[in-house]
Image (cartoon, rainbow, N blue to C red; front, side, top):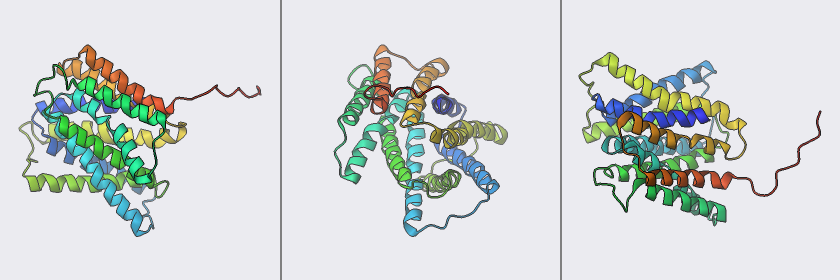
Length: 292
């Protein structure tokens, strides 16, 4: 799961480098999902490829998951094109308070105190790291609204996919979500008139960029999550995958020359603390069992 977080953190800076070569967010998002759908589809077929026999509610939830999932990619990739990677990567973690709020509304429950404290830490960290109240110039915040919308979509996708439980296999869900999201992104791009033309670098280099981005951002991390996630207790997976944030910020400074301020580091620390807080053990650790 640490590798999952590291790969997601690497994805942002590499995506920004791809933009500098001539690719745009519409072509990248559609291309990544096309390759991910192909990879997950082949994996699904290799495991038998049986279409689940489920009720209408299941398929409506799956379609809604694909719709909301397309918003995560659309707004996040758009944000990366408009502004610095660290700001978009940090604001994406606002999915933590958004998930808490949506869950409280859907389930009509008051969040526990530790969850409320987590929301406060993540929100304060996001504000501090993006320097809304300080020296951040308007160009640095151009992609901020899109990043916030991506976080909101991510929270919605998390709740929708969690509601599916164990219905169907993870490989099939990944294949279905990727296919639906890719078709939606393609439709939005065509309707908006966004260019999907191959840049001047040519087809081979464009496909190579898309293959690298798809592997780092979609296929390999999802595969690792499917295999490793169920083996981890509680929220340890969420804590480990939060490595995405420091990796994204550090690599964007090294590869892209993005500024790295002390206040930004403090904000990132608050975000990571907020993610870990709900999953920390309270009380004494259980005594070890007898030696065998």
